[in-house]
Length: 166
Picture 1 (cartoon, rainbow, N blue to C red):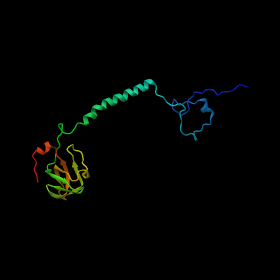
Picture 2 (cartoon, rainbow, N blue to C red):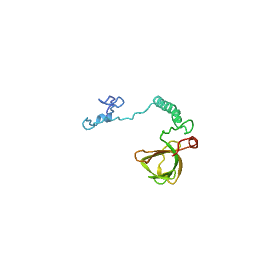
Picture 3 (cartoon, rainbow, N blue to C red):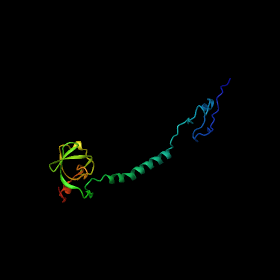
Picture 4 (cartoon, rainbow, N blue to C red):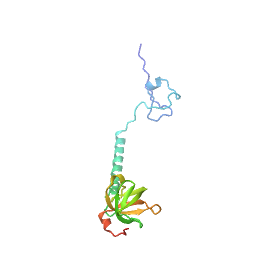
């Protein structure tokens, strides 16, 4: 008796992508669209060398073009950048006592719930990190409550510019 082997059938499965083909092993098992609802590929898709090279070149080009933009955004503060303070901002000395209390020019003041303290680089400073420290600042008091709303820690150049003090 001769051993019978199933022929290698290379035809497309209906509804499957072009690279998913039936082999003898898949055609011999029972196939039902109700049980096997997801079409599966028997062989993994591989990137050919030219396609892999093209994708690598595209990613390298995209990374190279985006690098100057990233570097341009990381310019250190103070190189031509000027902070504009509101007209209502007044100069003074701020000492942070706690996260809700402070001293402005030696007088106790409450800080508003949304109080913002900006560093010389114009980033937010968390109040609990500067408790007990004193800074020369421009500040704004909320008119309706009399609480400290916003303060900017000044650089030496900004502190040298004249501003009304209270």
